Image 1 (cartoon, rainbow, N blue to C red):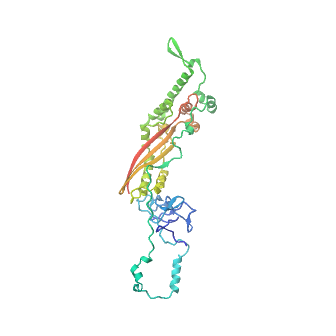
Image 2: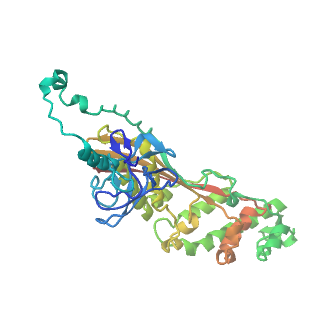
Length: 416
C-alpha cells in the first residue's frame, strides 16, 4: 500500500512535500524512505520560500518517532523562513494516496458500484443497539496523547567550536623548545636577536666614572631580554594607535614579560567582543530559534529542539578580529583569529507570549606564535614577530605564551 503513513493521527512528511507558502521540502536521509520518497525530519531544509525568498527549515518534529536520532516531521508542523512566525507549515495530508495510479479505494468503489445489488435502507429502529450508539461505533479509536516533551535542562551548551578550550598543547603554546643552533639553522634572521658569547664589553657597565660593575651571564641575558621587550612595544605601536583598545597590546606584552603563563582577561577585551559585528548576527539567529522552538503552551523549550539552536549558531559567523580597522586598533595583534568558542544558554523564562533568555559567549585565543605564523610571507619578515618568536621559543629566554579570554553575557527578549 502507498497511502501516506499515519503517525499519531497526522500525516508523515516526505521529500517533495510543499509548505503553506509554496516551498518544497528536501529530505536529508535518503536511506529512510516511504513509497520511494525520503522521510522528512526536524531540521530538514526547504527550497527558497516564494513569499520571502529565504530557504526554510522544519523546526518541529514528533519525539515519539525518530530516524537517525531526529524526530520525524508531520503535517502542520512549523517551518521557519523569513515569513512571520507561524505562517509557514508543512503540508502532509493524512490518508493521502502517494503511490502510482489511482488509489485502490477508488477502484474498489467503482467495482462495488457496478456489481453490488441494490439493498433497501436499514432503519435504525431495526437495530436498537446501533441506534443507541449513533456513529461512535463506526468512528476510529482516538489514539492516546503522546507524553509531553522533556524540557531542555539549563544551563545548556548550544555551541562548542572544534578548537579546544584551555588548549595548552596547541602549537602556538610551545616555549623554550629551540636552542640557538636550531633557531639559526631555520631562520636566517635569528642571529640578530641571539647572542651566546660572553663578550667583556657586554658584561660590564659603568656605575660611575670610577667603578666598573660586571654583570653575570644571567643578568646580561635579562638585560638583553629587556631590550627586546622594549623593541616589542615600539614595533607594536603602528598596529595599535587607534581606538579604545589600543592600550591592550602593551598590557599583553607586559603580561608575557611577567612570564607566569597565566590566562589574561581584561574588560576591554570583553567590550571588543560585545561590540563585534558578528555578535548581533548570531544573537538574532539564536533569538529566532528560541521563538520558533519554545513550547508556548507548556512554557518551556523542549530538549528535542536543541538542534535548532545549534544550527542557528552554525548558520552565523563567529567573531574574528581580522578587519582593516583591527590592523591599527590593536585587536589584530591581541587576538586576530580566535582559538575556541563556547556559547551557553544560561537561563530562559517564558511568560505568556514573551520570553527572556540569558546567553553567555566564552571566547579564547592564544598570545603565542607557532612555525606557521613566523613562516608567513609578510608577518614573518617583520621585526615585531621575529622578536616575539625568539622571546617565546628560544631556550635562552623561554617566555611563556598564554591564553587570552573574553566573556560576554547578554539578554535576549522577544515575543511570538
